[in-house]
Amino acid sequence: MDTLLTADMVLSTLGLLASGYVSGIIAGLLGVGGGIILVPVLFQTFVWFDFPAHLHIHMAVGTSLAIICFTGGQSARSHLKRGAVDIEILKSWGMFVGLGALLGALLARLIVPDGLKLIFATLALVLGARMLRGAKRLGGTGPTLSSRLQKLLAGITGFLSALMGIGGGTLSVPLLGAAGRDMHRAVATSACLSVIIAVPAAVGFMIGGWSIPDLPPFTLGYVHLLALAVMIPASMLGAPTGARFAHLMSARQLELVFAGFLLLSATRMVLALV
Image 1: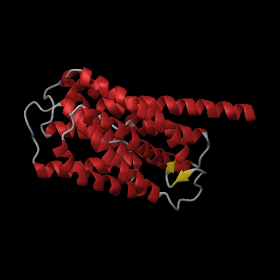
Image 2 (image 1 turned 180 degrees about the vertical axis):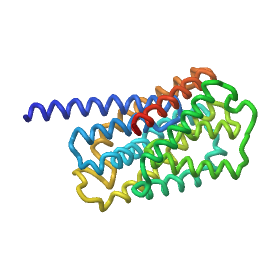
Image 3 (image 1 turned 90 degrees about the horizontal axis):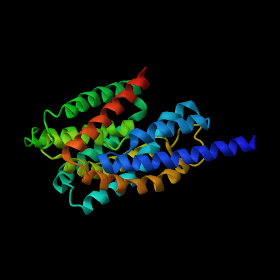
Image 4 (image 1 turned 90 degrees about the vertical axis):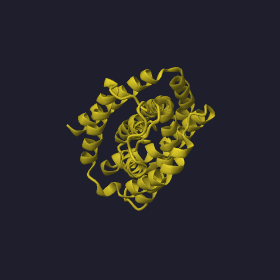
């Protein structure tokens, strides 16, 4: 029995390390936080270790956001070194994105998950198909949204991203394109926005889960500290690799990769619904 338990722990640790590294690569490559990989992996890990069922999804989301604080930071640092980040966008959108993320995290327990999955899947399918078609390249025709609308949508991006445990790149990269930024600049700037989303959202999940009954050991609210400790080094190692790949690809290649990422994300959400 002890041998089986040890084997399970070793396999789980290896799985967390591998998924952390892959999520880091995706974070650097696409300007996302990597939560699209982290959330399902963490969810299955918590199921495997027989944590209370009512905690699985909230802990997966909260822990994912805490990991993204570090992964996104490493990815953002790599893009900043290359001078690809739009600082003016960060100044303009930052407060709205951060407040939206904090609000989303605090309200997470009150919102029906299936409704959010449906919204996310629909939006990702539409945006993915549009980018795959290449009808309008990011940044090709200048900004198509007013400054006021950009800030509103930035707040909504933070809100929805916190609820789903992602860094927000799935939504912020197309939004940055509508704001007139090219694909490389959008990906780089989105990497920085993922940190602005993840930090207040992770704090919100810690606060929101503080008094929840049946929390397992080594947790801080909805954040599982052991999973965090295992995955952070691997994800931070992968992020610079992804950032290097992003700057080696053409804008159209990066656009196609991101379109595929959106369509896969939408498919995963649809499967989760059915």
